[in-house]
Image 1 (tube, rainbow, N blue to C red):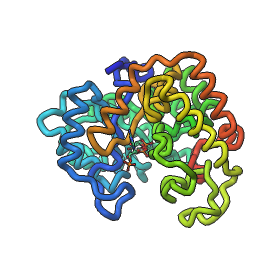
Image 2: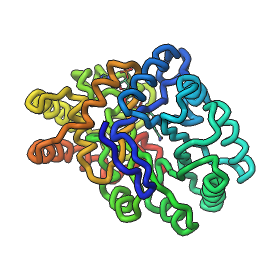
Image 3: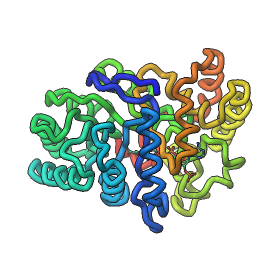
Length: 334
Ligand SMILES: NC(=O)c1ccc[n+]([C@@H]2O[C@H](COP(=O)([O-])OP(=O)(O)OC[C@H]3O[C@@H](n4cnc5c(N)ncnc54)[C@H](OP(=O)(O)O)[C@@H]3O)[C@@H](O)[C@H]2O)c1
């Protein structure tokens, strides 16, 4: 597996990595029931293939994703890189206590990267959490500090506090290019690696849905889709929907994929990986066959003409969304 350096950390990470949101899920959870046997098989195969970066969070099934990953990595911890994420805590002591609990769930005594999952508007509270993260690094609980869903203002706060952030994890795909306007240039300038999530837009960019109506409501809650037509949203997003533009991206992907000898998923991921600031694309894989398909995007060398065509095809979505960073339309990224 091809690797890249994670920002200025010196840590080499595989360019495709495993999203663990579904791990430990029960019937009522976002991704539904996830079998631990499938998780174990997926993690074993990923480690054997060099896909050794695993992205989890307390927020994924209330600690059960961390538990499930810890279980799958039993006896193999040293072969893996774990990125965990924590919600903002009320004070520094609580931050450390919650981290120690997370380490127990993960059956380890350190994580390779710890991120603050989402920023808050209260800058004093955010500063307390960033400094607590820095302190966790100095105490050896965490090797490198990261952030997730941080915009320029909050990354700048970390810099002013002297907290060395090596990665920012945010939504980035052909259907969510808003970060290109400000966030990506800031990351490039300051040695912050990009770890993208939803690079397959929860399956939409695999090409398995032929029309907007085919996409399950949960997977079209985001701002590219019409909130008024979605019972789970029930209101218009702040920016106009871009459903025709989404279909145009899918049409072009489906046309180009066979020419590039790739599947639609592989081409969508290869487009992300072609961007120089990208460190790793985190992909949610539910089983070993999805992992095998997705990881093959890592070695694809895309022709410049193909990249330009995909850039052009996705410009319409970008124009409608503008610089929107919170693709759920909740304006929580500053
Ligand atoms: N930091 C954050 O705030 C944040 C937010 C969201 C996600 N994340 C992270 O990013 C990871 C990935 O995001 P995501 O899981 O939301 O979405 P995603 O990676 O865009 O989509 C993953 C889903 O697409 C389907 N899929 C994947 N590969 C496929 C293939 N080759 N063929 C067909 N279907 C395929 C699978 O679902 P089905 O088989 O059920 O269709 C899979 O669960 C998460 O697991 C999590 O670690 C982080």
